[in-house]
Amino acid sequence: MENLAMHISNGIVNGPVAAVFAVIALAAMVLCVRRGRQHLDDRLAPMAGLVAAFIFAVQMLNFPIFTAGVSGHLLGGALAALLVGPWVGALCVAVVLIVQALVFGDGGVAMLGLNITNMAIIGTAVAYLLIAALLRILPRTPAGLAVTAFVSALVSVVAAALGFVVQYQLGGTADLGGNIAALAGTIAVSHLLIGIGEGLITAMTVLTVAKARPDLVYALRARGPAASAPVPAVGGVR
Image 1 (cartoon, rainbow, N blue to C red):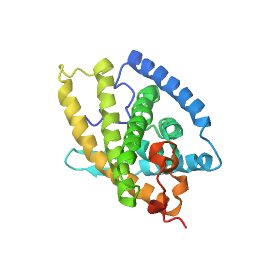
Image 2: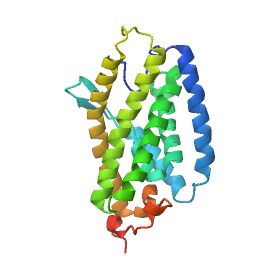
Image 3: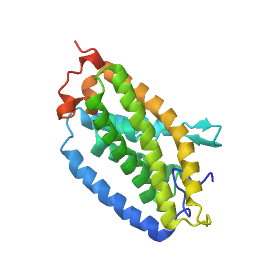
């Protein structure tokens, strides 16, 4: 079971399914590049580099989940979506996953499409949908931003993990005897605990940035009804 988790290793899912998700991941990354260019400016471009570097560094630090017998680390989808938006955020996470697979062997190279789909695409997309919804109903205060960051990070981790369950159902190489529900339950519970850790890290990081430079938090300056409210309550801007 220790191999049936995020950062899927080679041989966990069969070749045809891995190839299909490689195509899906590539198409999604092309779309992210095209849409991300529309948002890049003198603030977002350097911020994207910092976000990718931070996610890479924090992903190297694992925290134990004693009740589940596994360890977890930041996936970064919610953090990236909050700071640089969904399109550039997904690219940041994907770059981190590619470097980890090619340089550190963390996740199989043949499984990159699966890992990118789960963590960069599903994780970031689910996080940003929640961020957009929560920032419409929660006050734009440090508490409101913290709750948004925590909830979006926690849910995005579980969603990314359940993406793996779907992939394993389609092409898992080990026979579970049709007991995919048990796998889903195990994966969901362990990643729920991991999501709590991710939520705390994400909330603390975003609050730190927002208090110093709220203009660098993409979610606070995104266009739309949710962005019409002033930001000084979060950042203390003079």
